[in-house]
Image (cartoon, rainbow, N blue to C red; front, side, top):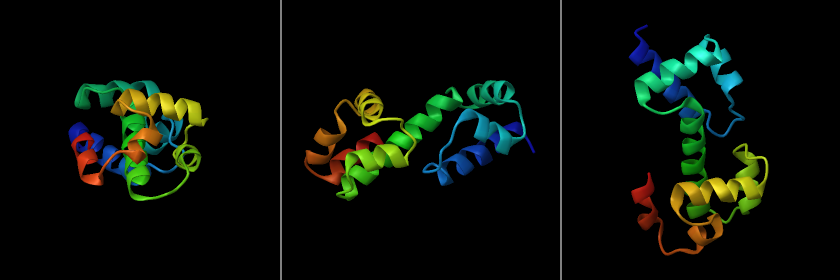
Length: 116
């Protein structure tokens, strides 16, 4: 498999398993490469570090869940693999410019589409 097709396949697999506990060890085991080699390949093809890509995708998923459900913020954070609500809040605010609670209280889901 060509490496660009391999990376796209890997991205699809990550996206389909984003609610699982994904870490570099798990993803590299699935890919069949050492985590160091996989990270180099991934960054070469996407411009993003693998861990950053996974975190961004988890945050996008969490934003969708906060927008479209009344699920408690802590449940969203824990189910997407964040160690605490504090680390989730910090990462969410860095990604979207506001805290998860403020995101949820803000106007409409359509306004959040620009972040996806």
